[in-house]
Image (cartoon, rainbow, N blue to C red; front, side):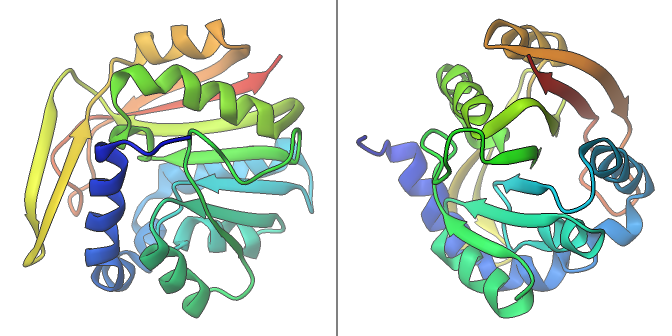
Length: 213
């Protein structure tokens, strides 16, 4: 399928900041106890050794955490720079370069999937296709854990840590995301919101745990 300008600019932006991003976020989960608890719950329900996809994995720190806790972890990201940074740091993770709209994965390949702050880079009209593609890659009853910023706004960056970028961050209404997931064949099992931690950007964050029906 043809790639949109949005995806080209997102890829280029993350390629540009990949090494800095990897360095800064290497131990990110150490300061996020609620995230770790939700990831632990996902793994406990999925079973040891389950193939778990980290969709929009960046430099792979979440995928590596999953691998360290018994998952067969597969990180997928649009940015070749992020994939390269992840491979250098986390040899225990299988990395694949790919788009959320066209995942490099077989039907039903994964027992579970995580998408932390990756749907924020999709245009609103792309969300349904991305969720359908995620569902395709999950086995029946497979779980998906999503995290995203809450709201209606779009924030744009043209400078990030001293690098020139061109990337939008779309905030979402949790009720709308939940409804769309249900429309494409997921059942919502958990919905949670939290305020930001002190070291995070000042946004409210939503988490959804959904199961493929």
